[in-house]
Length: 160
Image (cartoon, rainbow, N blue to C red; front, side, top):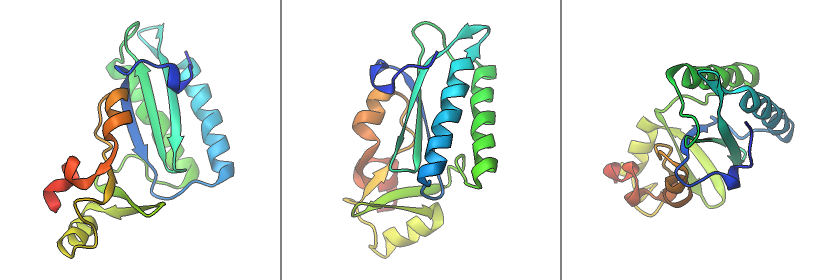
């Protein structure tokens, strides 16, 4: 069951998918329609899942699931990954590659390989205060409070 992202409880499980590039307005509109359709039919063992999403900075898809009525199962998680893989093919983007880092440069969101990010940290091109996106957050509360943070407050800090 599709619900407004903002109405989901803070305990909702969350998955963050970062795109390898900014999405165009047309792509965003299509992806929102695709997400709406996917979530409406998303189930776990025949039970409808209560979920919502938001897209931030034309680059991040945050998919949240309220597990108070029905939890994600292996099959429902597989279905969501398959859906995301379909978006990757349709829009020629990477969404599942966890070996890349996004961070802010002013209001611009930069996207680098982890190897390049480490080099930038060594060269002081990024610092402890650089705002990074911690896509490893596990629930909506962590997403709201600890997703967009200075590098020193995230796993990225180990490279500083």
